[in-house]
Image (cartoon, rainbow, N blue to C red; front, side, top):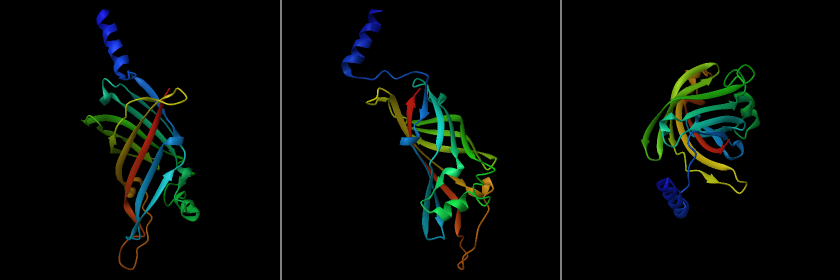
Length: 196
C-alpha cells in the first residue's frame, strides 16, 4: 500500500499523466479531417474531403496492439470545393452516394512499428466492396485535458488505394494517352478523439 501511494505521489509531483486503460473515444468531427488526393489529367492533383464523419476508437495504453477503430464517412458529404465536380463524384461513376451512403473502415489488427508509429490493418468498405488496407499511423498522442474538462488525444494516418478495386472504373482518355482521373488515391487522416 505504501508503495502504491509513493508511486502516485511521484506521478502527481512530476506531472506525469495517468492515462486511461481500456478507454473508448469518439471522433470529434469538428477537429478531424478525412482527405483524399488523386491525379488529374496527369498534370496536377485534386484534393477532396468528407465533411461528415462518425466513429469510435477503443484502446488500452498498456497494450496498444489491441486498439480497435470503427469509422463511418457520409459519401454525400464529399467536398472538393467545386460544386459540379462534387455532383459528379456523388453519381454512380464514383461514390454512388444514393445507393451507397457510407464508407466504413473497421480495424482487424494493429502492428507496433515503434514508440510513436503503428500499422492499422482493417477492412475498408466502399461502394459495397470490402478490401483489406493498411493505414500507417503516427500516434496516438498522450491524453490532454481541454478547457472544458474533456480528455483528448489525436493521431495522423495515411493509406493508398486503387479506385478501380472498389468499382470506380469511370475514365476518359486524353490525347497523350493519359487519363482524366488517375487510379491511385492517397488518403490522409487527421483525427482528434474525445474520451467517452
